Image 1 (cartoon, rainbow over the protein chains, first blue to last red):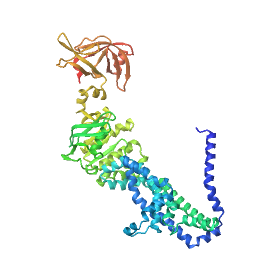
Image 2 (image 1 turned 90 degrees about the vertical axis):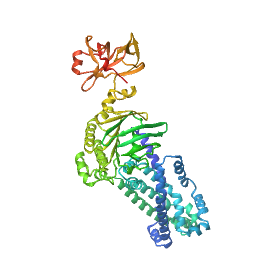
Image 3 (image 1 turned 135 degrees about the horizontal axis):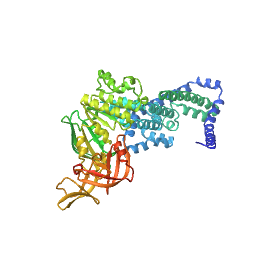
Image 4 (image 1 turned 45 degrees about the vertical axis):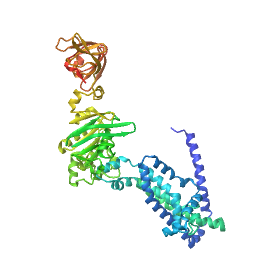
Length: 254
Length: 341
């Protein structure tokens, strides 16, 4: 049984971290009037940047899901040094400075040769923004999917095989449905991380401008008062979407 | 018919090596051995979940080494049941692509699970879940049903119920059953034949009574529940042969063996009495009771006659003999009741 002193101390420390997170968000929200927000919402530049942000993050998430889920499955099932190294390596984008990630991406996607081979321009395009977002955010999806696949007992797949399913069929009938919740959580995390990315994107594509870059540009050019309404709008939209998605995934669990 | 030939598989320090095993169509074969002896590994090799290193597995004369599990016409029931948790009972039963939908009602009725169709596996009791798992396996129309300790996690009454069910299904469907367990009583109740597996080696294969009456070695004898396993040596005194354990000599049927030997004697072949018996039995030894163990239908009396022997007597006999620890008794054993292994 926990002592009252232990619980009181835990609660006190919890309040400190909650205030640390809530106060800045509350401050910009309270410091912005509804009329400022409505006026900002009529600006074409703001609406376009929000659309580019969400659209690019969605492309990154779809690409990350298609390519990352199979790798996550193999990581969860194969127990060898190669996949242990891959799992460790997949954490690198989380720990390196994102400006460094942007420079690394620039060295690959900035070459004219790649553009001439693929016919796709990465620099200053939605594709480039999505590439930068994928690089920094796919580990969130990968980690969540690996854990989800690990939680599906391998004997269930064997049982499906014994019942006559081939490997693809057993994956889609057993493994994937049982791992869905973890994968969806990972997709939400990846999308959220993509939306908030700034460092890597600004190096690959200053334009078309995503919302974090727009906020930065307005702050450096015109000051806090001009940047704050865009920040509040992003805060509001992101909170609404993520709370809805998390509520949806929790309902599925129930 | 299932045939295992020269099966070898190494997993770390463990080596499985089954030289030869043939299981007839419709046979109920039990692979019996202690934990870690390689029983489940053998099932996984037969199922095709693990690839063989050497040897071959033949089903009805066809080598299936390269066939994936879904092509082998096998089904599996495990101790952990492994029902698909996101599907209800009916969808679990109908999961197999080979499932004949018109068999559902018949199998569900036989296994008494029709009323569970809409329930999720997490809401089932252990016995219900195991019955559903058996139904799912039968719906696969398997040629070989693999049972990996299917009774291991069940309470005694459910275990009896599922045991009877398995026996009944094997009788009716004549599907080949391969059942692994560490429980000799379970094996004896179900098996047409038993294979004894120790440390990855198949030591003995035979009918239940053959194995119990003539276990291949002392380890097997102990494992299958022999209470009197005597390690000693053959001695010759005045041209007559005896089996000597420490300072106790047993008269035995004359044979040509010499050197060290192991003999067993069934507890129900050991007669205990207050006075020395005058009978045809060749071994009468005086000893002292050192332990009394009550079983549901009998009493096991352990007597020290220089070596420890366990006799099984009825409760009525125990009462009449007024047995108690430290009481002196005579032990009588016919020489033909001693079996050399």
